[in-house]
Length: 166
Image (cartoon, rainbow, N blue to C red; front, top):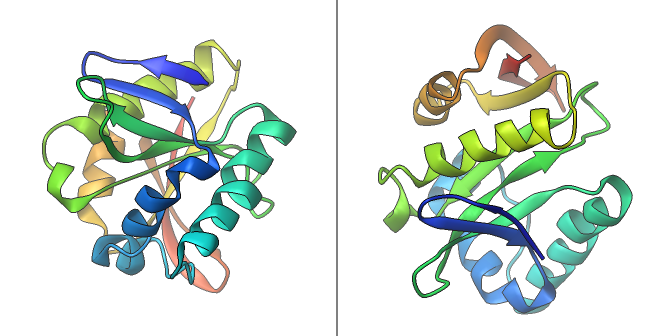
């Protein structure tokens, strides 16, 4: 199901058919370094990640992480979306892109559209974002889309930067 459209991208719900892409994305060095190793090593693991993560959140919350794909050719390039974590009071925005599609403005394009969608369509008053302390590129992107740095928090015994949009 298509959720958002930008100048160059379509953001849509993930399905088990996206397992090949998810297997690649979740094993990118930047994903493992900044987001964490999810233990997704096989296509079956990737399908399970999609079903128990994004698809479960779509059914429970009506939103989740979305596939970001190029309009031209429907090439999957990353994920961007909204997540409701038990460990955070408010919904947060998350994004990740294959390394070959980074630094081309796709993160900004998808994250700014997702942030607007969260505020305008889902009526979320406050949207958060978290990044590891050394993820400077994501921190810059979050500030570029209008989020404010609020300090650090601890989640799962890890110190993270906290950003918020109101």
